[in-house]
Image: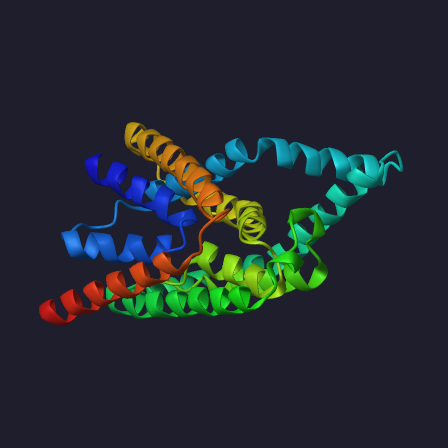
Length: 271
């Protein structure tokens, strides 16, 4: 129970703060000498972080669904049509990650899901963040766009970078926010688009494993892990959206460098 709760908190925080949840869920148990809690835990933490997105962005999600419905029925105004457009962009941007998850997730997790590789790929996450911030800082702040002005180029690049996060150690939020910065989105707009885009991927990752749940699993542990993952995920979203209104992501990139170095150092010591 304690391990599941601790790792649920790790998942909730690191799914949205750009430091790689998959990397931390590989490295933290390795550093602590813990075995992985198993499939029910995986389902619980994914559904917990999906719940966090739904709770935090419930108004935006309702607007996207309502705007799409009204537009399809030809009853929508300009605002509804823009919401329908954003919903379509989120759908299109979700396709690369969806295909990668269905075709290759097990392959990559089996071959790359170790502390050494996750530590190395944290350096890739750091590089993506540093690169996105470098492009962003060179641009005139007045041309940065908000969420209502997300375009097809933004959606395609962000979607492709989200698919790369199938590698444990590459942060989904870090890669997608960095991609949004490169295309011209403001930092908070890039974060919001990243989190909304992550909902289908996170929810899908959890639901795809539900049929594999064993009978007689520890329901209390699953509920606890889900609740902790949802609560910490909600807090992480609220923190990062507020943080990025006035600050950049470079501190998270330096954290990835440091934590990756620690993981590699420990791995070399025990190997």
